[in-house]
Image 1 (cartoon, rainbow, N blue to C red):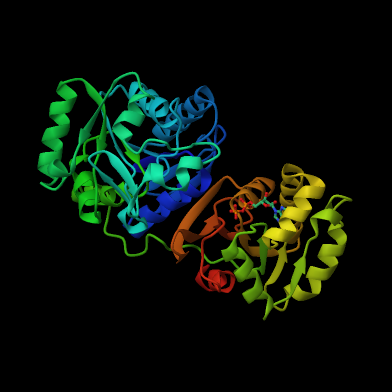
Image 2 (cartoon, rainbow, N blue to C red):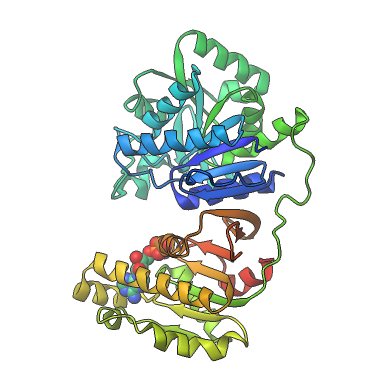
Length: 420
Ligand code: ADP
């Protein structure tokens, strides 16, 4: 039976959370959306349902999150986690507050905590104010985010605009005194009718203390950082064995391919490094606008696949992307490339490719959807934030899904070494 059931408001956030749980000794599986009726419950200690609810309309985000909760409860999970971004990406309307409040109501409980802090990545919360490195959140690029501009770093105030019930704070002074002090403070706030409590954290020791303090909470919300303290509760309760192999994946044999649709600086360098030693085919979006010649791509790939990994990429430097976007429009260019790479992924798998690296968040989403993937078992990290994974559905595929700026220059080849 799974122990922890998580709901993540985006795909890479779900992977990030699973990776954190695996690192701390829980076997984790990521579900791609709410599984269809009758889908078997995967064998795992933690299940995470990845939604695309971060910037959806509030009602749609709430509905999807509640459906995920229903599935996770039926699957047998006993504690629930709502995962959002460590920069608390939301607007004055939501979706963090309304979704959490909806989950509280569905679970019939009076209170939950909010901890976006992730000190390892420079996200800390002090007196309810979120910092990114040395700056307040609202003094960073997040102030101008196109969908969720974070103009206020005071998350007590920000969350207060999103929720109906009262918002409070467990500040550094409480958190630094340890789990008992945190627990007592939360109970006091609960008795005063405070349903939503931001919790300060400046270092991993605080996150672990918060985890311990929330042992008996049915719902915890936060970034992936605060999840680091949760596995220990299950071990202490005798529910989770000590596992040194939580990241173990079943072996997957087959051809190897990389598909790159990200144009980030990191990806461009990874493409260049890979190309020095292995065959690569560049897709030209202007040609794709006249139709994808899938047979030509496959005729190129076939003879290479038996020799080693191949790369198909549309990644291009900013000047070239700008030229393409001027001619096709930003959205059309993006959709053309995503659809082409998704169709190529499907054809490659049909021909025996079983080990795939995909570069680009949107690109990964398109590939996962085209391949009809419903669940991924999360394995060891290739580079920080990007684990190797294996699909639960047949045919089993080893996958590394990398969003934009992640990974070292040799990421593509390293991925095939880390994959089972
Ligand atoms: P990242 O994670 O780096 O943001 P994404 O895959 O999420 O990568 O987004 C990259 C977007 O750029 C995708 O929509 C992709 O289709 C598009 N794209 C890729 N190559 C090109 C190109 N040469 N010209 C224009 N758009 C491109």
